[in-house]
Image (cartoon, rainbow, N blue to C red):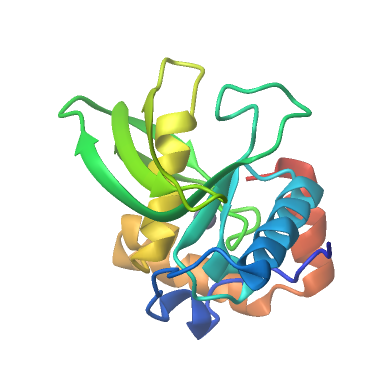
Length: 185
Ligand code: ZN
């Protein structure tokens, strides 16, 4: 396993089209292992493959965010498809490991149902419904956005967008790391 470098906005890779995983082979397993290590090191709530420079349609969710125990494995979703979003929404500040230190209010559905493939190549369904404290459903929607190249910055108006872009263009790796360690995702 290895910690991979997180792709930060405005690097173009975050806007590259993603591709479906045909077979869960050794290379896919290694990618997922690296993603887990990278997410745990950055204390993120979730991470998409595209954020570590891979175009596979995969994302992972922190075990505790996914309602598991701290030391359980992360929830791995391969080729995820959102099957249902509740019409009820709420707005909360959201962060992203590709936008260190940036938090913007994002409207999300309270509940979501996602179908995906697991590491054994089997199809499964995960349902999440966020209470005031929970952010599982929000994290699923946020990470799924990455696979369709939708980013945190697309949620704000043009003025704030320019501010965020300038801030991130100037950001050094050291500063990004410090901000990530302060806040997580
Ligand atoms: Zn993100």
